[in-house]
Image 1 (spheres, one colour):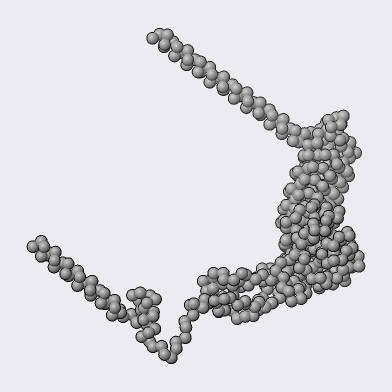
Image 2 (cartoon, helix red, strand yellow; image 1 turned 90 degrees about the vertical axis):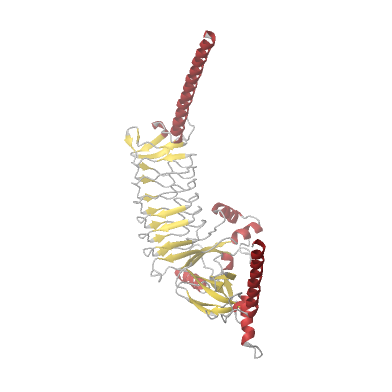
Length: 479
């Protein structure tokens, strides 16, 4: 008994010792993991030694290539001071093509020069609030998927954020000017512009995924080709590289088929600043971009339409069930009704400017007139004709129907009556009794006259008589 009892005591101690050992193992693993994570965080945005930087006053003008003599990191946390000197500026080309994979800019910085961080692999960055102007190509050719423009910025320079992967963009009201190519070749699907913006320069948003944009009344100038080369489905780099470098003809044509016009909507529908609809033109680089059989000519490559309107006619029965496909109309191209804003359906007679890179005002007005003659616009009225739908008769409205296009998207219903619900005309040979019998058979026990039929009365009488006979037999059996 004692040994057994002693053995139990020993086993309990062993168990407790094992539990204690496990505790210390887990604790050591947690500490190790904490150290690893701490090192990972430090490596994500590492602060270099002062020798990595070249300074001119308070401005960093150069950075040693990562992996050089001072082991300067590619995942860069720029210090607020270098050699005891506060850092307030980043000079032109200071960090261009350094292979940077991460970036933190101190809040002390108030100026960023041209090409400052151009051509790196930076996936994200926070621009300090003290910045008032973003210089040309400052963050171009990186891996940015999102960017927040500080509320103090007034100017966004040429190609400042071009060739990135930005998906959504909100331009603050402090910005008055967006310069040439500022956000070209991104993946922008949504663009928000605020009151205060006055000018967007040429090709600022080419090669993106934009479909429609609201523009403020303060915006008085949209230069040529700002919204050209937009495709919902194709990446901007793919489009640019294939179009410019001369891909096979089939690839070129498939890209061209996916280009669409962007729809711009003015804050005041009357378009008080007379913003013109526009189409960008490019020479087709020795390829037949639009498939017209002509090579080496200037070809339209998309643009924007101002205040376009779309009309949709639905075809439903009296219970609002769809009985025929809806018809969407965006314009009329010489008798051919358009259903979308794709470039391939655009009019063939858009006038080509003498200088496709800088058309005159009169040439842009001619382009605007050609587009306005085809695409429906807010404020216009257009007729829609109801199709014949087998088994149905149009009830309302009368066809053709004049639809007032008061919104960007306008729709109405052609309502049809099912022919099977329409009463057949009564022939002279018909009589009232025959009609009532037909109705009675259609709705049992509820004929139009409200009087129960003789056949039904006979059936009930027979049923009652049967019950009486059964009752009499039961009484006789148990008496």
